[in-house]
Amino acid sequence: MATTEEQRGWSLAVVLWLSAWYLCSLVTLFMNKSILSNLGGDKYVLGITQMMTTAVLGGAKVYGPALFSSIVGTRAAPGAASLGHVHTYKTFYRDMLLVGIMRGMTVIFGLVSLAHVAVSFTETVKSSAPFFTVIFAWLILGQRTPWQVALSIVPVMLGLALCSATELSYDTVGFLAAVANNVIDCVQNVFSKQLLQSLTPVQLQFYTSAAAAILQLPILIYIVFPQLAGASERLSPNMVALLLVDGVFYHLQSVTAYYTMSLLNPVSQSVANTAKRALLIFLSILWFGNPITVPSAGGMIVVIAGVLVYNHVRLRYAQTQQTSRSAPTTHRV
Image (cartoon, rainbow, N blue to C red; front, side):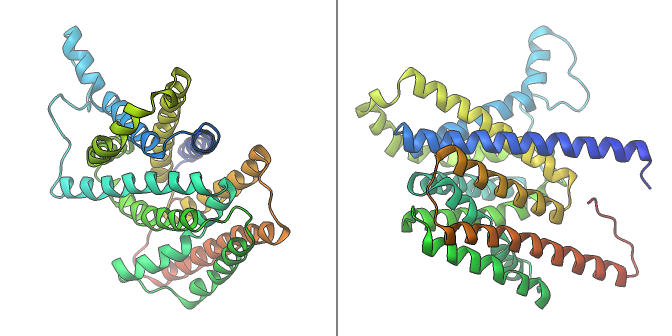
């Protein structure tokens, strides 16, 4: 049983990592929208910059101490990764390939969505994650969802339908891109949670980012390079600086998300993510001044409320099942 001091330490860590995750998500999202919509940035250039930056920074974190020690001739700290050594396990390369593909696709789909529709609408679509989580839990893991939990998803989908039907910035490409981003992100989160049993958050962030960056090389060669050759004026020093800052915050968002995920159980993580979505929707409307209709605003509220109800019902069902089992199970809340 955890002591009071340990509980305080864990609670402080949750607050710090959660706050950092919220802040980095806010900065990254707003910079993405500004670069794509206001400054005429290219989504492929932005996406690859994010993947390359986070791979480089992650590599510096994982292998930097060993490299520094080899240069100055000192012994690396215990537990530091050695140069030329990759932390592997039996299915390491397969797992990194799968998550790398998913990370690259979520970045591109997310940026395509932001380029076509308002930030508030994109985040509302992403809030429908419970619907896709239930579907993929059944298809991939064979988990059957209780009818109470399934019923709690209905308000989420009704709110999303209302929001989509009355959204002034609605665009089919943007909507489908947001849905695709949502679907892939749900699968990625479930898979990443399992990988954190074998890797640290920093290692997981680095290896998957490196895999995603490598997989995006064909886009870099066949699409981005020709665009750069004929559109150098779009990559002014200010634009380059913005892309790099955006990449740094994207990296920090990934790391803080993985650290938060490592401290919380899936239900708590989902609640925290829902609260983040609600905050981003509200702030994006204030910051960008997106015009919204009353039905659209009502749809957003219904989606957020529906997700909170879903999380409450799912948590209550999980607690009931745990009580009925003979073997005790412990979860962080």
